[in-house]
Amino acid sequence: MLDGSVTMRAELLDEAVWKTLARPDARPGGRGTFLDLATRDTGDVPVRIFLSPDLLRDTEPTLYRQIVNATRFPGARLVVITPDAHHGYGVPVGCVIVTDRASGAIAMGPVGFDIGCGMMSARSSVDAGAATHDRKHAFHAEVMRRVDLGAGGSSKQLGELSTRELEDIVRGGAEHHARGGDLARGKVERDRIPVDDAWKIPFGGPGKPERGKGQVGSLGGGNHFIELQREEATRQLWVQVHTGSRGFGHGLATNYFAMARDEHPERGADIDLGYFTPDSPHHRAYQNAVAAGGNFAIVNRLVIFEAVREAFRKIFKADLELVYEISHNLVQAEAHPEFGDVWVHRKGATRAFPAGHPALTGTPWEATGHPVLIPGSNRDHSYVLRPREGAALSAYSVNHGAGRRLSRGEALKTLSQEKVNEQYRRDGILVNLDGEVPLDEAGACYKSCREVIDVVTSAGLAEVEHTLWPLASLKGSESALREKRRERRGIEKSRDRERREARGERRRG
Image (tube, rainbow, N blue to C red; front, side, top):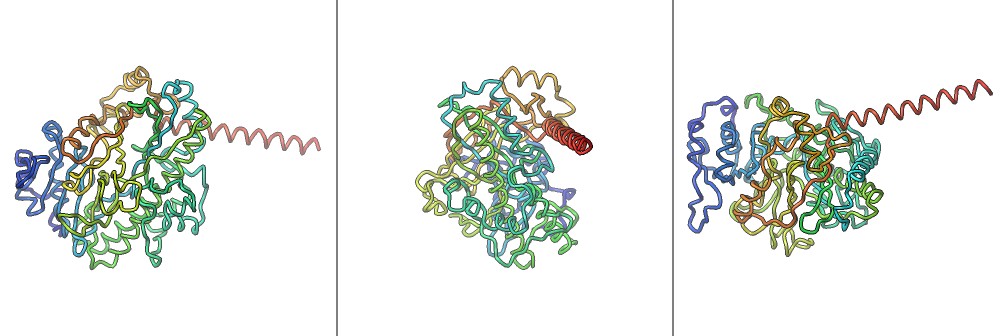
């Protein structure tokens, strides 16, 4: 249990040898599909590691400390490490933490600041050969006219929402956004994540979640992207989007992290290990905040999909069909056949309900399992998976991407901008409008997505349904921001010219 004695600097007994203690699953009837990690530091909480020998060897030694942190939340029943795992904040990115629903904690670090961050995929019937360099460039330009990129970006589709409009989105989710239409029916992870009527958005505070009022339909920065892809079997064009809850989710997380720290200052200063137990006055409120952030993120992805579809129609003269939308930063109440009623925290991990899972009853995926969207880097394959029954072993979860192998700082120090740009030009992958690849998001920063997916499929967690190759990628990078600034300067110059002309007209009049 986290009680303040466990910090990022606490001495651990098996830190030097933990990789040697990860042994193939030896349960009766087990197939050795995962590594079971039992050490003097993890106690009686089972830790299931889904890593190949090579991925385990290459994993940062410091990951162990974060695995131990994950086991010590009150009421922890299971920790799962997915094959894209890497060092995160407090706990690994690429982990699942299962806690008892009646008595266990809802942990905040495993949800993170980008509540509900996730993916959207859409497909078309257009042959990938139609994506010439000029059309890819034109597609990017049309998307950028409709979707703001980068940190602090604002909504070009909806503008600044009123408080009432924001409330409708964060309480109604995709159900509200569709408003009787069939755009999102069965195509999103949750049509609406329930929020208590009595819960109030904690506006203001250090987080200022009201920032989200002007950001629905904006991408954000970092590893968020919009990508034009080729489906390898059909050779048809697809689009994937990766984004989250923007300033709204970040603001909620900031405010609730502060509440957790104020409630129990004795637990230490490590904000990423904050949590609420059922006796906390903030326990139910934080559940509502996560639900509201999740609804915001879902609608944000749907609004971006609608904008991207408009751009696709204009350039490729064809429609885009929404395949699925799903999050990979969320805590949800679920029932598990091994652990009963639990909270499942997925930090950089994706839900994977197979055919016949009770939560899929009445949905289009009841007989097949829902799609799972796994992006690779923008110079690697991405995948759409279909969950299998074996996913119960991993708390019905798989990875959320390829996982980083270079930190942002290391990438900026070691990668050559000229060489990276040339690699992408040679591969025919257009990044943003100018071809300038953000070094901290280049393909070399990430593990091989195929290597990661092979672990998932060999463990019987899911199977590959679609394999996608990047053709063009939009990132909220400095180059994209430069394009945005140039566009704004152009608009400002045009307005200045119109003002000068208007003043001239008045003088002549």
